[in-house]
Length: 125
Length: 201
Image (tube, rainbow over all chains, first blue to last red; front, side):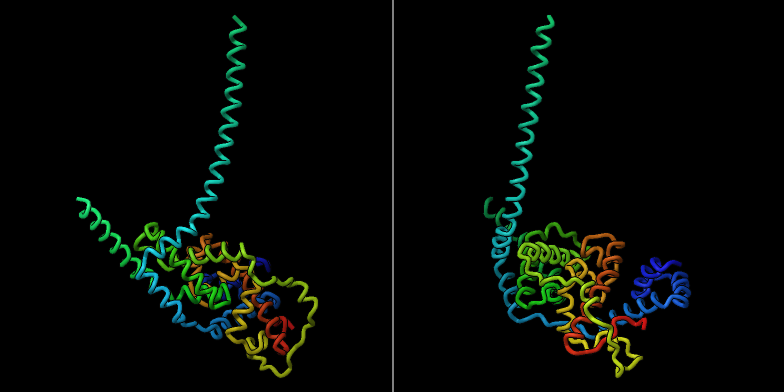
């Protein structure tokens, strides 16, 4: 096993998402590669540190009450969300005017080719 | 006829409203915690949750009943966060990690318990340090590390939440942890701990 593969697999081992077979191969690699082994140990330490030290925070009262207020007045949600989606539709509008310009140019070119062909064919006879 | 139609519309609107409350509100705490880790600011986190709820309400029809509502909400939240904070560029300055590595010498703490790898690597870590260290890594990496290592979700769930393939989640996680490790060590040093840069020595 090369170190690159070991690095990739060791992340999976940290999350206990590795098959027993691969885990055994990885352990074998660790036995002769101290760099990968220490990288693995560091990753385990980081994960356990985050798990132990990161607290779950309580939802603040102010947020709870404003959400209750929102639910009691659903029209608030739709109108405010509307102003946010306005920018969306503005973007869409811009892209649609751009594509309209493109179609106009294409039509103009096609008309010119058509006229040219028409006169050319007329001149043949 | 008209009052009948309007009362039917009203009824369906009410049913939709009840459904929204039933599906979405139980995830408030998880949403707030995720928002807090992403923004590192209580007020911003509250705004982000409210914005997410409003969008979720407005687009509730696009949520497929019986599917993972939490994943759907987290996806809205994460996208709102990315849109908002990329625009305002409110994210704190990113650090050049290589520069830091060159700048600091490896100092081994003689007094640390050799069995306790965590304190050897990170010193005594507080919740605020984690929040602060997370802020210094790019948002895409931050999201997967928070969801995996703090919220304890599986790769598949995270993939659904952030809207990318499982393979991408894995590689972001690997890289994100490396960055976070450096960032946390940086915090430990700034608080006066002598931490080992790596366990190799």
